Amino acid sequence: MPAPGELIMVEPKRPKPPKHWSDWTVEERKAQVVELGLPGFRADQFSRQWYQRLNNDTNSWTDVPADMREAVKDLLFPELMTSVRELKCDNGATVKQVWKLFDGVLVESVLMRYTDRVTMCISSQAGCGMNCPFCATGQGGLTRNLSTAEIVEQVLAGARSLAKGEIDGGIGRVNNLVFMGMGEPMANYNSVIGAIRRLTEPAPAGFGMSARGITVSTVGLVPRMRQLAEEGIPVTLAVSLHAPDDELRDTLVPINTRFKVQEVLDAAWYYADKTGRRISIEYAMIKDINDQAWRADLLGEKLAGNLVHVNLIPLNPTPGSKWTASRPEDEDEFVRRLKSHGVPVTVRDTRGRDIDGACGQLAAATKN
Ligand code: SAH
Image (cartoon, rainbow, N blue to C red; front, side, top):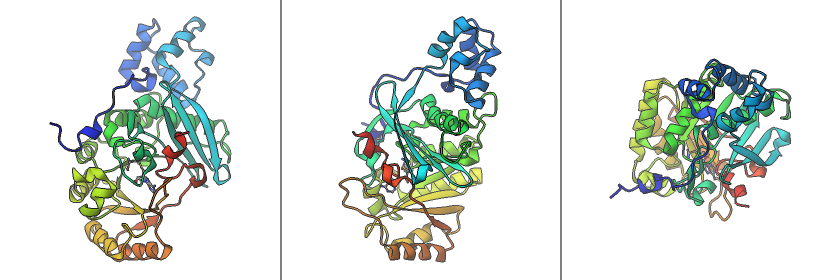
């Protein structure tokens, strides 16, 4: 018998996406290139085209003999996703992409441009098995895990658009990445770690972004949080807590019946200890559900003295939801109480609301 909670982590059986350059390590790429009959040093050239020049038109790669270009595309760089919809809001500063994967499955990514940086919010799974009742993605269940390359491609697609100046605000680059789109990244651990490695590896192997600019957000899969602490990649870990007490958290984040608040926090402090990185605690403010002053005090007591920052997210009500965002005065009091415990706190802005691109709303628009 599987333990409770085990069942929902089992991925439904589905065909796997085609293997792609971003799925492979440097050695594997070289082997693939040699197998095609090309010299091994081409591998570095291909990587430079893909991750540095951001040129995904393999036909234009002059370092590939013309008669090989078709094979290089089909076998090493197959198309993994096509854009089915692009939605803009916030005067073009927020762009949501809906992607169709090889098997027709839809996932979404969001690009947010601020005055001094660009943040991308990406998906790690199609759907999600965690079943949090306030989250749109959670309502549809898990369709499948994304491959490493499918995760990397969401970022590169954004990077290409920015490099070409297609995003309002001129030419730019991706500075920050948050695994806060669809899915539970720690339930697709290997693909997510693979993607983080490809994205942080310096040229020519990878995209060369800083691990410090990457945030992995989790419901609190304790064994995976501890495993992440051992990887030696200093990403920021965000924990979707949403309640300081087990009674309420059992209902808001059902995996809490398996991994309790204190276990999750212990794993978070372990992560902070190992990496020196400040833990981000995510807390969706839900009116009269988790926003009481006493819960702010309890949260403050549990977090005080640790390397931590609280991110309060005004709830984005999902269609048909009986819940709504907290009253401003309750939110203010919550903030005040956390601060009185010496816990740093900010209230997150809610980009992308009018394109269903805000937190937890990604699935709403993919149902059409
Ligand atoms: N599965 C991961 C990452 C995806 S969700 C996780 O749960 O952390 C990213 C963040 O958005 C999480 O903190 C999640 O709890 C929050 N979220 C989901 N639905 C929301 C909603 N309707 N309003 C506000 N935040 C929401």
